[in-house]
Length: 173
Image (tube, rainbow, N blue to C red; front, side, top):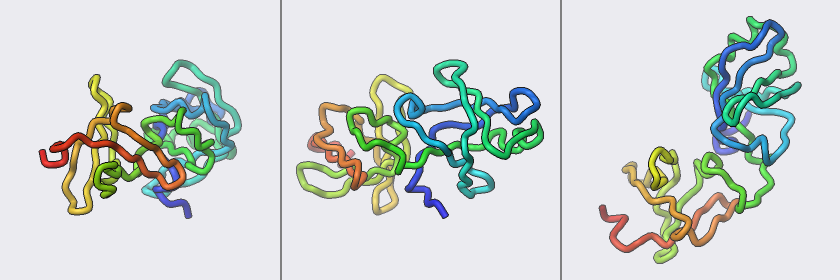
């Protein structure tokens, strides 16, 4: 069984498109432009289920039409409407120069000054000009840290750790 830390969310299944199982797929991550994968995981009732891609084609920068093996009717496609779609971490090429925000969910943040783990990235808020990492700390509290490239000193894709030179006093806010 696949664990949640082995995948990251890339989008959501939309409505069926036609009657032969094709459906819309709204994606938040450009992983399809960078990495080829034969399968994706779809969350159904809290369980990550692998689906093999028969074909897909882009409709826009945020939408594709996708057909999965064994999904051959509009009724089957309707059952997946609204389900979240996940990409397997093992299919990523490990190039930190092309890593997306969505891939960073689950990474641990380490303060370069103290070598202490600050927290784990739960969410990334990129709705404003200043992107923020939303962290959960070991004591259960939440913390916002700027996701500025100027303070990121290292990204270890293998260990899923981001080392940051966090400004003094930021962790005490």
